[in-house]
Image 1 (tube, rainbow, N blue to C red):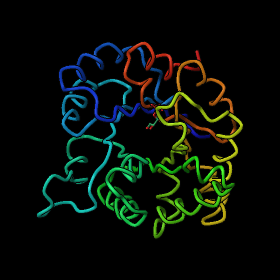
Image 2: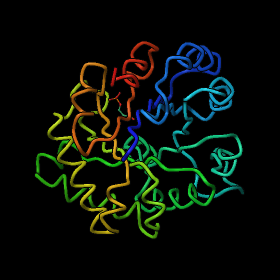
Image 3: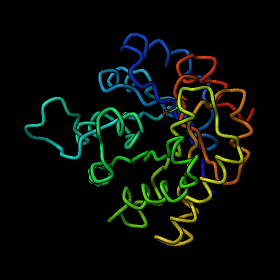
Length: 251
Ligand SMILES: O=C[C@H](O)COP(=O)(O)O
C-alpha cells in the first residue's frame, strides 16, 4: 500500500522569514503522515528555517537540487551529505527547469540519484516530455528512456523507496493540466517500465507523482487514479490555504 505524497516545490520563492511564517500556519493542520505525506521542497538558503520550523510536525523537508559530490572544489554547489546532516529527507532531481536552464543531463541525474542514496536521502526524480515530443507521439518512449537512464545501477530496494514525478513540460506553470487520463496513462507506463527493468514488487512500491498545474480544484480527480500516488506542486503550494487544501485532499 503506497502512502500518497503531496510535495510543494517552491522553486525560487520565499525567504527564511516567510518560510518560518508559512510553516507556523500549516504545521498543526497537516494530515497524519501515514495517511498523506506532506512535503515542502525549498531553496537551499531556506532549508535551515524550514527544518527548524517544521520540527515535531508531519511535514517532510526536501531540497530542490543537490550536487553529485559530497565535498570538494565545486563552487556554488549543495552537498547531499550536508543536506542529510541538516535533516532533509528528500531531494528533487531532474526537474525540467534544471534540465533546460542549467543543462543537466540524464547522466548527471543518475549520478545525483546515487549520491542521494549514498547519503541516506531519497530522490524525487522528475521526468516529462515537451509539447513537441507529445505532438510527435513519442512521449512514452521519451519518458521511459529518461527513467531508464535515471535509475541505471540502482538496486530494486532503492527504486522501491524513491519517488518519481511525471511532469509534462507543457503543463508546468501554464495553467494547462494534463487531463487525469493523460497523467494516469503516463504514470502507468512508468510503473510498467519499472516492472520490466526490475520486478512487479518494485513497481508496486514506487510512488509516482503527477506535476503540472496541480491545484485544489483538480487534485482529487488526479489522486483518484490508480497509478498516481501524489502531486509535485509549484504555484499552488505557495499559499497557505491552497497548500492545506492540497495535502488534505482526502477530507
Ligand atoms: O515542480 C513543480 C512543477 O514544476 C509544477 O509547477 P506548477 O504547479 O506551478 O505548474
